[in-house]
Length: 434
Image (cartoon, rainbow, N blue to C red; front, side, top):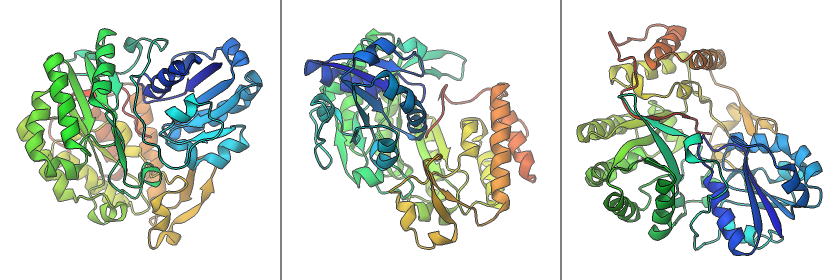
């Protein structure tokens, strides 16, 4: 039995979503070929001989790339069962089937995939996870690096200590699938995966859990063991604002274990918008978390959904003012300023009271429901911001210069008198989130 596993885009990281099922399939006796199309070409000979082709869909961008690829795959792998798996597969099932996919699996996919994916089990499986098999993926040096404020770079690996999330943020694509549930990966499996990546050159590890402190005892057990074995290894993780405050007493342990960066989804400084998104925090909560992490020497990487149906030029200007006032200009990845809300099929945003005022039809090409801002001028501003960011990033302008160019689009922003040219916190070199 021959299987080809294909990934198209995983935010510049070596794809965990290929390495994990590869381990399960090989254990079940399959001959597996992995292809990360962000770094490799399709192996046409392997596809022609394949009995199963698995397509990993962890996110929006990857799904769009897979849909564009499917006509060619159906020709090259004419005898294979084609399976789409990952978070974005169930919510786009009808589109994928119309494009030639035979079987749809969700984000707990490994057991069904190893069984041949002919009849996926109902519900959200509880799996006993295996150590990912990364043997035929490109080397870690070809993937993401952590950039430090002094200009140094570290090769970054990636693993997951849990899946799913306990929370119900209304705009999050995880919620319709996991519905407030999360699954932990056994610490020995996580540590074995990190161990093999360190042996392959990793100097830093990204934990890709939707929220690293969904299970704080589990998370701390892993990072404590990690630091004992690899005292110079750094890591980053994603943690909700709510959890940063709730588990403030644990943050020094994260720092001391090597935490170099915490990403937190702020989304907005408008409390009315935060309430609509059901984020579980206010703007004031974020600024408390910012003060807390700064006092501990823990760099914070805030992310935003800058354009929602309720964004206006005035509210966008207020966001920029707040970022400048709190010395955050160099801490924000420029792509964040142009992020526009995506509403996939099944999103809880569809049930928001008053949604009919701004919600349109589902657009299959965009994999999102269309929506129009209540202030029509916000769409023009969003396009201008996106164009500014694209040009400035392409020409490698420093973050303060990009911020100033964006601020100039709305005017009246109180820019800092002088900002460092270089980012003042560590950052990964592919800051994309959807």
